[in-house]
Length: 222
Image (cartoon, rainbow, N blue to C red; front, side, top):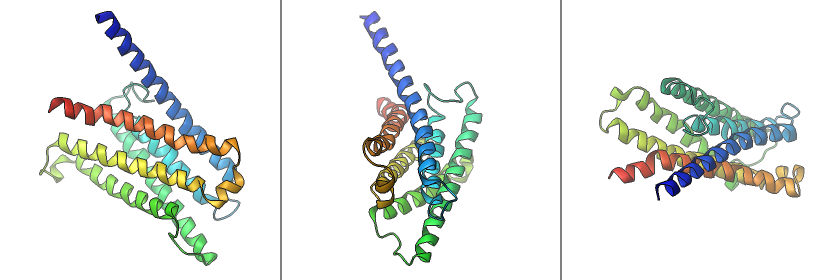
């Protein structure tokens, strides 16, 4: 019976490792592919898909996976170093997202098009606002004395849960962007479906990681 349990545990660790590796590769490959399709710098609009994929597919994914016990690229580093890497990657994500929002906003002004008139635009705006609030909330974890109303463990749980919701919003925004006329015209056939699966895969991996690290553990302790 114990041997069977050890085999199951080993299998689960292997699956988590493989899924984490797949998430890393997917985030990197998807961002590179979008940069090839958009060719940033050729037009003002071209910066929008490039910056947004860089923000939400690459930087934000890596910022969360840095805490993965199975597939973190900084697994051998101290927790303090991983926290610093998390902050840097999240700040880079926000900077890219704000720049991406600014380019599409100004591009619409130049072409006299309405702002936030699609689900992609609305969800994208909500995602950026959520990410900014999430970053501000993360400051209370770096400096616990700023907010003493809740315990540090409770704030970590809230931060992780809120971060998961924000990341899923980002994945939804990326998917809705693939339904746009621009993306559908430039990416067709099987490649479109492969791209559509990318945020789904990374979203599932991140959801599993945060659930195992915080939500399930919290439930088992209650």
